[in-house]
Length: 392
Image (tube, rainbow, N blue to C red):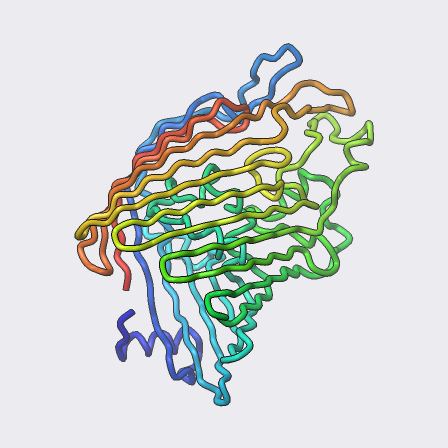
């Protein structure tokens, strides 16, 4: 990140002070042209006779896509005695359709000690992502492993607002993190049904106030040694189980409901990640298991493999993802009577990408994703992305 007098002046204006001795303005412009081919038969309900009732129609389309462009400032001030004040304030920037400065990208402040680690508060990357994110290697927002078929933590294991995060020092390659998410007290008008809870936050972040104390917690432990990386992560929410709701013969009115929720608002999830990066070769392996995701109703297992080879300014990447639900069929009820079912099935995802680095800050890419599934919840999808990225 190159600093200049202009960059420091802008950073100081954004944070309202120039007291920080080390402040950096940074950003990344990322945009692509994408072709998407989405199957027509998904997100449907099977009637009692097994016939499919379509809900969402598929499409084919070209689109100019913003791929998580951002602008931010970060800084650190030496307070003496091994203590530092640290902060980051990052905004999402949409270079295609507007809607700038309103994403939940990292915005936090805290203290760091040379011997005890750091404590930060705000909107932050989660301990779960800081382990499983070792496999986040592609460029386009439609082909990155943050999408549903490559990462079960794509909703609740990326960034969390209202969070407190402790990060340990590095002990000969070992470290750990712990996060608490606290959204305040439960109000009188808080959601009482799964459908109300799902609509509470349109961005699908941790919705409303699940409890009067800690709504979510996450933990991880990592080890780094040269080209090797290994980590384990866990996350859980403390919300309603809705057990009595589904046992009530009058639940759901005429709209109906499934017996399970996605995610499980009283659920949890864990993951393992291994990585190797040396010379021209890089390989990662992820495994996840849990019901704190929106991919399927009930518990799902997910395996994700990536590989990369670098030669000169060129990088070739490939990935394979396999997701499988524990429950193949989920009953659907209206007023306590089963009226149909939703069939869930395995998802196989293949990703292939090529990247050319013009410099350390500028790149271009071509990436292709094929997500193959025969399910009532998800349709087969193909995405071709051609894009560019410039960092500063």
